Length: 347
Image 1: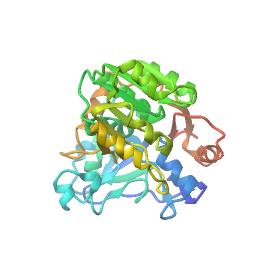
Image 2 (image 1 turned 120 degrees about the vertical axis):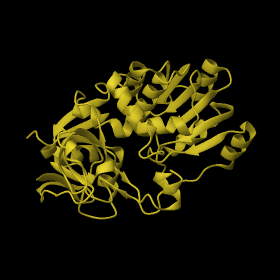
Image 3 (image 1 turned 90 degrees about the vertical axis):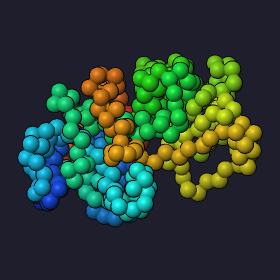
Protein backbone atom coordinates (compact mmCIF):
# COMPACT_ATOMS: atom_id res chain seq x y z
CA UNK A 1 0.00 0.00 0.00
CA UNK A 2 0.97 3.65 -0.29
CA UNK A 3 1.24 5.99 2.70
CA UNK A 4 2.21 9.57 3.53
CA UNK A 5 4.80 9.09 6.27
CA UNK A 6 6.50 11.58 8.56
CA UNK A 7 10.19 10.71 8.23
CA UNK A 8 11.62 13.49 10.35
CA UNK A 9 10.90 17.04 11.40
CA UNK A 10 9.65 18.85 8.28
CA UNK A 11 9.85 15.75 6.07
CA UNK A 12 6.84 13.84 4.75
CA UNK A 13 7.34 11.17 2.07
CA UNK A 14 4.88 9.23 -0.05
CA UNK A 15 6.13 5.67 0.31
CA UNK A 16 5.31 2.03 -0.29
CA UNK A 17 4.56 0.05 2.88
CA UNK A 18 3.29 -3.46 3.62
CA UNK A 19 -0.48 -3.72 3.79
CA UNK A 20 -1.31 -4.63 7.41
CA UNK A 21 -3.37 -7.68 8.30
CA UNK A 22 -5.95 -7.53 11.13
CA UNK A 23 -5.15 -9.59 14.23
CA UNK A 24 -7.64 -10.90 16.78
CA UNK A 25 -10.25 -8.25 17.58
CA UNK A 26 -9.12 -5.96 14.74
CA UNK A 27 -10.50 -4.76 11.42
CA UNK A 28 -8.82 -3.60 8.22
CA UNK A 29 -10.14 -0.26 7.02
CA UNK A 30 -9.71 0.83 3.42
CA UNK A 31 -9.23 4.55 3.93
CA UNK A 32 -11.37 6.73 1.68
CA UNK A 33 -10.76 10.18 3.17
CA UNK A 34 -8.46 11.63 5.84
CA UNK A 35 -8.34 15.19 7.16
CA UNK A 36 -5.23 17.06 8.26
CA UNK A 37 -5.48 18.04 11.93
CA UNK A 38 -3.64 20.91 13.58
CA UNK A 39 -1.78 18.32 15.65
CA UNK A 40 -0.49 16.70 12.43
CA UNK A 41 0.83 20.08 11.36
CA UNK A 42 2.49 20.64 14.75
CA UNK A 43 4.25 17.27 14.49
CA UNK A 44 5.45 18.18 11.01
CA UNK A 45 6.66 21.68 11.94
CA UNK A 46 7.95 21.12 15.48
CA UNK A 47 8.89 17.45 15.34
CA UNK A 48 7.54 14.25 16.84
CA UNK A 49 8.63 11.81 19.55
CA UNK A 50 9.41 8.97 17.14
CA UNK A 51 10.04 8.37 13.45
CA UNK A 52 8.94 7.20 11.01
CA UNK A 53 5.21 7.66 11.69
CA UNK A 54 2.16 7.62 9.44
CA UNK A 55 0.07 10.56 10.63
CA UNK A 56 -3.68 11.00 10.42
CA UNK A 57 -6.48 10.31 12.89
CA UNK A 58 -9.46 12.12 11.34
CA UNK A 59 -10.49 9.50 8.81
CA UNK A 60 -13.22 7.46 7.19
CA UNK A 61 -13.34 4.33 5.09
CA UNK A 62 -14.82 0.91 4.43
CA UNK A 63 -14.10 -2.18 6.51
CA UNK A 64 -12.52 -4.59 4.05
CA UNK A 65 -11.42 -7.44 6.28
CA UNK A 66 -11.83 -8.59 9.89
CA UNK A 67 -9.55 -10.52 12.19
CA UNK A 68 -10.40 -13.53 14.37
CA UNK A 69 -13.20 -12.87 16.83
CA UNK A 70 -14.80 -10.11 14.75
CA UNK A 71 -18.11 -10.61 12.95
CA UNK A 72 -17.89 -10.93 9.17
CA UNK A 73 -21.05 -8.79 9.07
CA UNK A 74 -18.81 -5.74 9.48
CA UNK A 75 -17.17 -6.26 6.07
CA UNK A 76 -18.41 -3.58 3.69
CA UNK A 77 -19.59 -1.26 6.48
CA UNK A 78 -18.64 2.40 6.37
CA UNK A 79 -16.85 3.64 9.47
CA UNK A 80 -15.07 6.58 11.09
CA UNK A 81 -11.83 6.15 13.01
CA UNK A 82 -11.91 6.55 16.80
CA UNK A 83 -8.21 7.28 17.37
CA UNK A 84 -7.84 6.90 21.15
CA UNK A 85 -6.95 3.35 22.24
CA UNK A 86 -7.28 3.22 26.03
CA UNK A 87 -6.20 0.27 28.17
CA UNK A 88 -9.71 0.00 29.71
CA UNK A 89 -8.09 -1.40 32.86
CA UNK A 90 -6.52 1.48 34.82
CA UNK A 91 -8.43 3.46 37.45
CA UNK A 92 -9.15 6.37 35.10
CA UNK A 93 -10.52 4.08 32.39
CA UNK A 94 -12.71 2.37 34.99
CA UNK A 95 -14.13 5.81 35.84
CA UNK A 96 -14.80 6.48 32.17
CA UNK A 97 -12.07 9.13 31.88
CA UNK A 98 -10.46 7.51 28.87
CA UNK A 99 -8.45 10.58 27.85
CA UNK A 100 -6.61 10.27 31.16
CA UNK A 101 -5.71 6.60 30.60
CA UNK A 102 -2.30 5.88 32.07
CA UNK A 103 -1.12 3.77 29.14
CA UNK A 104 -3.19 4.78 26.12
CA UNK A 105 -2.17 4.54 22.50
CA UNK A 106 -3.32 6.87 19.79
CA UNK A 107 -3.75 6.17 16.09
CA UNK A 108 -1.67 8.58 14.06
CA UNK A 109 0.81 9.59 16.75
CA UNK A 110 1.70 6.52 18.86
CA UNK A 111 0.84 3.99 16.16
CA UNK A 112 0.63 4.39 12.39
CA UNK A 113 -2.35 6.41 11.28
CA UNK A 114 -4.78 6.97 8.46
CA UNK A 115 -2.72 8.77 5.81
CA UNK A 116 -2.46 5.48 3.95
CA UNK A 117 -4.45 3.20 1.70
CA UNK A 118 -5.22 0.90 4.65
CA UNK A 119 -5.37 1.08 8.43
CA UNK A 120 -5.65 -1.72 11.00
CA UNK A 121 -7.47 -0.79 14.20
CA UNK A 122 -9.36 -2.45 17.07
CA UNK A 123 -12.98 -3.25 16.24
CA UNK A 124 -14.28 -0.87 18.94
CA UNK A 125 -12.25 1.95 17.37
CA UNK A 126 -14.34 1.84 14.20
CA UNK A 127 -17.69 3.56 14.63
CA UNK A 128 -20.19 2.44 11.99
CA UNK A 129 -21.96 5.20 10.06
CA UNK A 130 -24.75 5.33 7.46
CA UNK A 131 -23.63 4.49 3.93
CA UNK A 132 -25.18 7.67 2.52
CA UNK A 133 -22.77 9.99 4.33
CA UNK A 134 -19.91 11.30 2.19
CA UNK A 135 -16.54 9.96 3.32
CA UNK A 136 -15.11 13.46 3.68
CA UNK A 137 -18.01 14.25 6.02
CA UNK A 138 -17.41 11.10 8.06
CA UNK A 139 -13.73 12.02 8.41
CA UNK A 140 -14.88 15.15 10.24
CA UNK A 141 -16.68 13.23 12.98
CA UNK A 142 -13.59 13.15 15.22
CA UNK A 143 -13.05 16.95 15.33
CA UNK A 144 -16.80 17.38 15.78
CA UNK A 145 -16.63 15.27 18.93
CA UNK A 146 -13.95 17.56 20.40
CA UNK A 147 -16.28 20.54 20.03
CA UNK A 148 -19.22 18.62 21.49
CA UNK A 149 -17.11 17.44 24.44
CA UNK A 150 -15.96 21.00 25.19
CA UNK A 151 -19.57 22.12 25.61
CA UNK A 152 -20.20 19.26 28.04
CA UNK A 153 -17.23 20.38 30.12
CA UNK A 154 -18.64 23.91 30.11
CA UNK A 155 -22.02 22.65 31.32
CA UNK A 156 -23.68 24.38 28.41
CA UNK A 157 -27.49 24.46 28.48
CA UNK A 158 -30.04 25.54 25.91
CA UNK A 159 -30.75 29.27 26.06
CA UNK A 160 -27.33 30.24 27.40
CA UNK A 161 -24.86 32.69 25.87
CA UNK A 162 -21.32 31.88 24.76
CA UNK A 163 -18.09 33.40 23.46
CA UNK A 164 -15.84 31.30 21.22
CA UNK A 165 -12.27 32.57 20.90
CA UNK A 166 -10.90 31.28 17.60
CA UNK A 167 -12.70 30.60 14.34
CA UNK A 168 -10.46 27.86 13.01
CA UNK A 169 -11.82 24.39 12.38
CA UNK A 170 -12.57 23.47 16.01
CA UNK A 171 -13.87 26.95 16.79
CA UNK A 172 -16.25 26.78 13.83
CA UNK A 173 -17.44 23.36 15.00
CA UNK A 174 -18.06 24.77 18.48
CA UNK A 175 -20.13 27.53 16.89
CA UNK A 176 -22.15 24.94 15.01
CA UNK A 177 -22.77 22.84 18.12
CA UNK A 178 -23.85 25.94 20.04
CA UNK A 179 -26.34 26.62 17.25
CA UNK A 180 -27.59 23.02 17.24
CA UNK A 181 -27.96 22.93 21.04
CA UNK A 182 -29.94 26.18 21.15
CA UNK A 183 -27.61 28.94 22.33
CA UNK A 184 -29.33 32.28 22.82
CA UNK A 185 -26.31 34.30 21.71
CA UNK A 186 -23.13 33.03 20.03
CA UNK A 187 -20.18 35.43 19.84
CA UNK A 188 -17.18 34.46 17.69
CA UNK A 189 -13.82 36.21 18.15
CA UNK A 190 -10.89 35.94 15.72
CA UNK A 191 -8.22 38.09 14.07
CA UNK A 192 -9.09 37.14 10.47
CA UNK A 193 -12.17 38.66 8.83
CA UNK A 194 -12.59 35.69 6.49
CA UNK A 195 -12.79 33.32 9.44
CA UNK A 196 -15.44 35.50 11.04
CA UNK A 197 -17.43 35.48 7.81
CA UNK A 198 -17.57 31.69 8.00
CA UNK A 199 -18.48 31.88 11.69
CA UNK A 200 -21.50 34.03 10.84
CA UNK A 201 -22.51 31.63 8.10
CA UNK A 202 -22.31 28.70 10.49
CA UNK A 203 -24.34 30.26 13.30
CA UNK A 204 -22.55 33.08 15.13
CA UNK A 205 -24.88 35.96 15.99
CA UNK A 206 -22.05 38.41 16.69
CA UNK A 207 -18.48 38.45 15.39
CA UNK A 208 -15.55 40.46 16.75
CA UNK A 209 -12.17 41.05 15.15
CA UNK A 210 -9.92 41.49 18.16
CA UNK A 211 -7.30 43.33 16.10
CA UNK A 212 -9.59 46.33 15.72
CA UNK A 213 -12.23 46.04 18.45
CA UNK A 214 -12.28 46.03 22.24
CA UNK A 215 -13.47 42.48 22.85
CA UNK A 216 -14.51 42.94 26.47
CA UNK A 217 -16.43 46.16 25.79
CA UNK A 218 -18.21 44.60 22.81
CA UNK A 219 -19.20 41.48 24.74
CA UNK A 220 -20.55 43.61 27.57
CA UNK A 221 -22.47 45.71 25.08
CA UNK A 222 -24.11 42.57 23.68
CA UNK A 223 -24.72 40.65 26.93
CA UNK A 224 -24.80 43.20 29.73
CA UNK A 225 -22.70 41.22 32.22
CA UNK A 226 -20.77 38.63 30.24
CA UNK A 227 -21.58 35.22 28.79
CA UNK A 228 -22.50 31.99 30.54
CA UNK A 229 -19.77 29.94 28.85
CA UNK A 230 -16.45 31.02 27.31
CA UNK A 231 -14.46 28.65 25.11
CA UNK A 232 -10.81 29.33 24.32
CA UNK A 233 -9.92 27.44 21.12
CA UNK A 234 -6.91 29.38 19.82
CA UNK A 235 -4.10 28.11 22.03
CA UNK A 236 -2.69 31.66 21.96
CA UNK A 237 -1.39 32.87 25.36
CA UNK A 238 -2.46 36.46 24.69
CA UNK A 239 -6.09 35.35 24.53
CA UNK A 240 -6.16 33.84 28.04
CA UNK A 241 -6.53 37.17 29.91
CA UNK A 242 -9.61 37.99 27.82
CA UNK A 243 -11.49 34.86 28.87
CA UNK A 244 -12.10 36.05 32.45
CA UNK A 245 -13.65 39.52 31.99
CA UNK A 246 -16.02 38.38 29.22
CA UNK A 247 -17.53 35.66 31.45
CA UNK A 248 -20.37 36.50 33.84
CA UNK A 249 -19.88 35.90 37.58
CA UNK A 250 -20.05 32.16 38.33
CA UNK A 251 -19.87 31.40 34.63
CA UNK A 252 -17.63 28.76 33.08
CA UNK A 253 -14.47 28.88 30.98
CA UNK A 254 -13.23 25.93 28.92
CA UNK A 255 -9.66 25.80 27.61
CA UNK A 256 -9.55 23.75 24.39
CA UNK A 257 -6.53 25.16 22.55
CA UNK A 258 -3.09 23.70 23.32
CA UNK A 259 -1.02 26.37 25.05
CA UNK A 260 2.78 26.63 24.75
CA UNK A 261 4.54 25.27 27.82
CA UNK A 262 7.03 28.14 28.18
CA UNK A 263 4.52 30.89 28.98
CA UNK A 264 3.32 32.29 32.30
CA UNK A 265 0.04 33.77 33.53
CA UNK A 266 -0.28 37.05 35.43
CA UNK A 267 -1.48 36.85 39.02
CA UNK A 268 -4.16 39.35 38.01
CA UNK A 269 -5.71 36.51 35.99
CA UNK A 270 -6.26 34.53 39.17
CA UNK A 271 -7.47 37.53 41.15
CA UNK A 272 -10.18 38.22 38.58
CA UNK A 273 -11.01 34.51 38.43
CA UNK A 274 -11.57 34.49 42.18
CA UNK A 275 -13.55 37.72 42.27
CA UNK A 276 -15.93 36.45 39.59
CA UNK A 277 -16.03 32.97 41.15
CA UNK A 278 -15.58 31.31 37.76
CA UNK A 279 -15.19 27.62 37.01
CA UNK A 280 -12.27 26.68 34.73
CA UNK A 281 -12.16 23.41 32.82
CA UNK A 282 -9.48 21.89 30.62
CA UNK A 283 -10.53 19.94 27.54
CA UNK A 284 -8.39 17.10 26.20
CA UNK A 285 -9.78 14.94 23.38
CA UNK A 286 -13.44 13.92 23.29
CA UNK A 287 -14.44 10.81 25.22
CA UNK A 288 -16.97 9.72 27.83
CA UNK A 289 -18.49 6.48 29.09
CA UNK A 290 -19.55 4.15 27.65
CA UNK A 291 -16.64 4.32 25.18
CA UNK A 292 -16.32 6.26 22.95
CA UNK A 293 -19.13 8.40 24.40
CA UNK A 294 -22.26 10.28 23.43
CA UNK A 295 -20.09 12.90 21.71
CA UNK A 296 -19.54 10.32 18.96
CA UNK A 297 -23.13 9.14 18.63
CA UNK A 298 -24.36 12.75 18.81
CA UNK A 299 -22.00 13.67 15.96
CA UNK A 300 -23.11 10.77 13.76
CA UNK A 301 -26.72 11.75 14.42
CA UNK A 302 -26.08 15.42 13.62
CA UNK A 303 -24.31 14.53 10.38
CA UNK A 304 -27.14 12.18 9.42
CA UNK A 305 -29.68 14.97 9.97
CA UNK A 306 -27.62 17.48 8.01
CA UNK A 307 -27.27 19.75 11.04
CA UNK A 308 -23.50 20.12 10.71
CA UNK A 309 -22.26 21.99 7.63
CA UNK A 310 -19.08 20.33 6.43
CA UNK A 311 -19.03 21.84 2.94
CA UNK A 312 -18.13 25.20 4.45
CA UNK A 313 -15.54 23.64 6.75
CA UNK A 314 -13.48 22.01 3.98
CA UNK A 315 -11.34 24.46 2.03
CA UNK A 316 -9.01 22.13 0.08
CA UNK A 317 -9.06 18.62 -1.35
CA UNK A 318 -5.94 16.76 -2.54
CA UNK A 319 -4.86 13.26 -3.46
CA UNK A 320 -2.89 11.58 -0.68
CA UNK A 321 0.06 11.37 -3.08
CA UNK A 322 0.28 15.17 -2.89
CA UNK A 323 0.72 15.13 0.91
CA UNK A 324 4.48 15.94 0.85
CA UNK A 325 3.86 19.09 -1.19
CA UNK A 326 0.79 20.05 0.86
CA UNK A 327 2.66 19.80 4.17
CA UNK A 328 5.58 21.75 2.71
CA UNK A 329 3.23 24.58 1.70
CA UNK A 330 1.60 24.56 5.12
CA UNK A 331 4.98 24.68 6.84
CA UNK A 332 6.05 27.58 4.63
CA UNK A 333 2.73 29.37 5.28
CA UNK A 334 2.02 29.41 1.56
CA UNK A 335 -1.57 28.20 1.91
CA UNK A 336 -4.56 29.55 3.84
CA UNK A 337 -6.97 26.83 4.83
CA UNK A 338 -9.74 25.64 7.10
CA UNK A 339 -9.86 21.86 6.67
CA UNK A 340 -7.70 20.02 4.13
CA UNK A 341 -8.97 16.65 2.97
CA UNK A 342 -6.73 13.95 1.46
CA UNK A 343 -8.02 11.06 -0.67
CA UNK A 344 -5.87 7.91 -0.90
CA UNK A 345 -7.46 6.53 -4.08
CA UNK A 346 -6.98 9.67 -6.16
CA UNK A 347 -3.69 9.96 -8.01
